[in-house]
Length: 323
Image 1 (cartoon, rainbow, N blue to C red):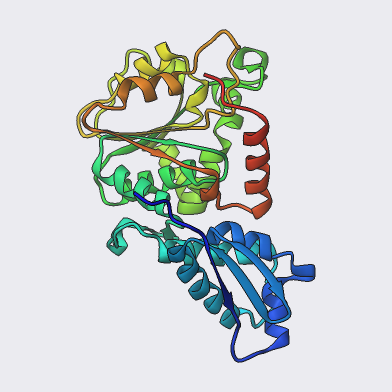
Image 2: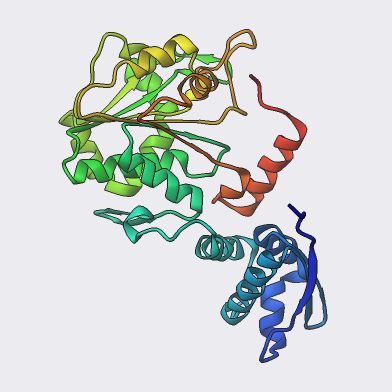
């Protein structure tokens, strides 16, 4: 099968508007590298002529995207704003089969949560269809936030009776026993990302009431042993910091009517170097098990500030994941 050969073409925005052109390209053309990375091409500009180099199918999408961005550039586009627009365009032009709106949007009382990349759509779809889902990938890809959103959605639809948030108490050398306070005061800092998502989706007052009624529960991983959890939506966050034994223990807690989502980043393991990550082990053991789904996020799925994506890329280049 012949290898596709990169081609070159030009894009000239019309009607020519120098202000709009400057808004699109940014100061000293700082936006061009960001556009090139997202569009999968090489991109250069001379005056009002953009030169695009890439595969034919990528060039067509890139020209369409540049035309759409140019029309929207009525005000300066800083990298953060441009990143958001490029993410939406990439989702719009993705080659994956068209999906129904319900696979990309979750409705909560405080508004909609919308997937912003093809893998996020896949993640939402899998959380609806599978009992056990894994979301694995770098920081900023929406693994935890979307899992909490899916849990809130399931609770609002009365598909589950409670939400259980679980996290291993191993963070950058810290251990619970060395921290002040009772159990909840010790574990709270480790669950802060989950709390933040809950507050954003449900509001502080409602989250507080749900905690009081036991509908939302926090649980250190070590306290899960011996429990069987029915009709619940369980989220195990930071799962890269579990051992294989802890992961097996957690997975065997799943009861009837329960759905579980496990999230983690195998490039940020805080276990001792002699310990194997339960998340890596689970990926190897469960890859072919029916009823289990994996979404493996990549750096291009990062939906935070563009600088976060560049930081993740730099670390991935410098370091390989621990196994």
